[in-house]
Image (cartoon, rainbow, N blue to C red; front, side):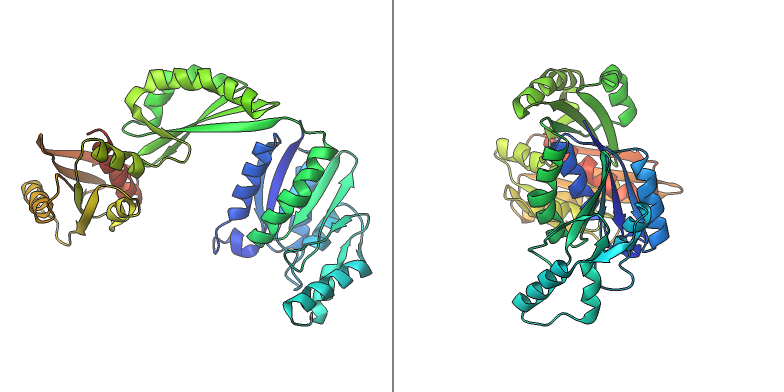
Length: 380
């Protein structure tokens, strides 16, 4: 099975000015195609550094995919960088210039002279027309290895990956297998506790099991390689059953299921209606619950920190004002280098007050409290 690396190109990505969504898309596409991904790298708009990154990647894997840097300006250096990495020159392709002019004609405007730069690609490269943009893409082979250069515009990149590059890779490397992943979501526990219960499963080869800790939530990814989706699912099933048996109610959902979705389903199962008041979460708990259909009447953001007793009273008053059945109040109170999170919970069956200390980075306290609040609701 071939292996791959992704190189995203752009100083604006390197400096964090824009989010790199292309690497995420490419990583999942390669995974689903059964291609092992070794590394993702971001390089600024510097031809020498890009060339060096490509050469280093080629020492480790068969497939190198670059994205970005194929525009018409001087700070679009990918064509020159790939040529440098492959020890060739760039060459002008008249047919590419014809394609570029035709594309601009369809857009109702003439190309500028600097668009002619996009008709230059490394010597020996195979050009692929870009029917959804102006920049032609290309790949260049070296023995069993290949460098593929895709545009940075996400819509163009995704179209070309699916319709041109993926079919090429499957044929060129005779790829028949696929990789399927199942992600189990947990809340109410920590990474170390989960690892203690399923640690030996994390040493499996196929399927593999890995943990990803977030603030107030831990994900467990089960990934299987097989010749068909059905065969991969059969590999995943027994491992998933074991994990579910060992972790029980810590698991709240899988794959695209969200904690707020599961929490609202718990309210709905009881035939109740939910209201929320919050302080220190920036209104995010209310927004997440309001974004979904379900038994959520609304919420209120507090501006003054209440005492625990006041939080309970305010929670109940707001619940009654909205004719709700369940009222949840959450308030963050910084205490030195930690944060105390106070909860008030009123249901038709009980009234509770409790506090949970948070000792992690203060900037993550709101998301930790939010996830903890949703976990409280989903366990009703």
